[in-house]
Length: 338
Ligand code: EPU
Image 1: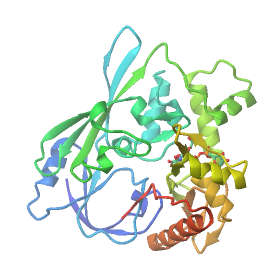
Image 2: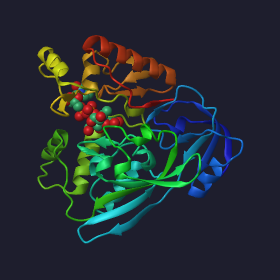
Image 3: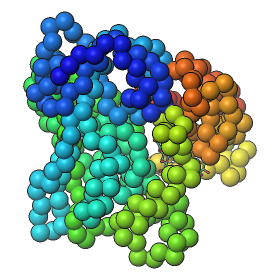
């Protein structure tokens, strides 16, 4: 474990924002993590995983703890086709998905190509194409920042919701996730191809009885068409959450916009795609200096090169105000603004 000074975080956040860390500590084992947490000169830390869900609006003065624990292990299986794997927090999410596909483990194929690391996936309960992390999550192991003791959170402890978990609420800033256990299927896996875009993609390829890999390939193709690759254009995926509004409010919206896309959440609540609301406000594909709104998916804000975090934030605020004015719907950032 070493402490580096004045390190650029540009390569450590998918938005590609050039903020600086005054102190940068990369840890690659639990022991190193505990050692770092016990450094007498520091009392607060900024925990950095894959940097895929954050917008840095300035330099960071407290030590940045880069969680770089690696390893993938099969830890248990039964004759019914269930397999439990334990993945260390610093593993790249998509590489983990590809590893599952290579081993024919089903469960995470719909979550292909999501940027970020395994260790941060439970925080916002990542989800795409009809599957959320909670559907395959068994537990995660954490270190309590205050006491450096280990604590395991089981599925039922995590209060998973849409892009939400205990780690964004009561447990926020208190624990560092060091590994995640997933409950997958090594046989008799039920694929989830109910999401319209996946069905269309499989039909296009004339696939009627898809394999795990074919579903993953379909998701990859859809994402590559719609979403910018952070290696080419800085971004953090969906910048906003899709707002959930009362049904009565949605009925009024639908009178004016009969084709408004939506998902029924319950008898009384409807989720409206924020990307559609933003597109209706004319922002899709717009560029303001190096900050912009992606041309294929208005939910994604992008950094064309040297945008400052505050410029992206100003654009996000402008979008929120315009959507509120036009639709009377408040859209909330999904990305953590630092
Ligand atoms: N839409 C528009 N204009 C746009 C974008 C979307 O009209 O610019 C409309 C589409 O036509 C479609 C609807 O909105 O009818 C939904 O679009 P899409 O299927 O792309 O999904 P989304 O609701 O915009 C969510 C997730 C994505 C995830 C996809 C697929 C959130 C905040 N985002 O987007 O997650 O990949 O569903 O499941 O829930 C992420 O979190 O970073 C992310 C990319």
